[in-house]
Length: 328
Image 1 (tube, one colour):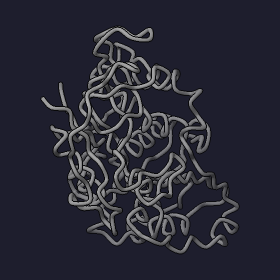
Image 2 (image 1 turned 180 degrees about the vertical axis):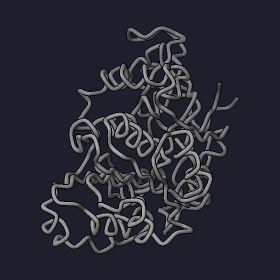
Image 3 (image 1 turned 180 degrees about the horizontal axis):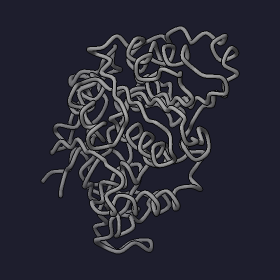
């Protein structure tokens, strides 16, 4: 199959559409780095901020390749890597590429399927693990609310909170997602923000208020949660899904809400917590194998479908960790 790459044709206006991207021919690897073939690509909301030049991981400009974390297979022995090894790396959305050896991380063979290295045992899992371990630190009897709760970060946050003894309430965008949260992921309650008025639903689900809030979306959802914070509450600000498609930032929450609740609000950047990755992989991997941690993958097949998969994610049409598989 000819080598191909997904590039950004133009900067999106609002919600991205497939015509903002193009699938173009790409050169074959020349052996300057480690030759790799892409097996699976991670598709994440933060990429929308990169397209607008507003993300700390760097911008993607028109004419440049889309890039994100990927699972790849080494094609030939090079720079200490062996042919057939599975690795994780930030890589272009491309069938085959030469990558610097220092950009590759070997995937533990116990991680099965390997795509988990992009989801619950990858950056989303590390984000959730660090948020619980270092920011929220739930205690038994506390109420934890999570937005975008059916995604790989939110679902893991809620489950880890429950394992620590907290009561978990998830906010999601469909009845199917809410049912999965309560029936499979063990959340105590789930709110469908598309069908329920958010504030009354939060009052019903959290009659004593909110002790812990893990925010993945920003916007009015963040404001509604902060209006219900208890004294001593902890808030982790992780994502801005509600704002990624906007050209100008929305007005922020009223700081008086934080002051009134004497709350601790901290921003979570996963790159600050790489030292937790080995323990996260070991602990969450063991919980998955024991059936204690549920996860869900939303996989599309084919590089030619990668752009539309990203657009669907930004429309809120995904369910679980969004991936594009190029090969099994």
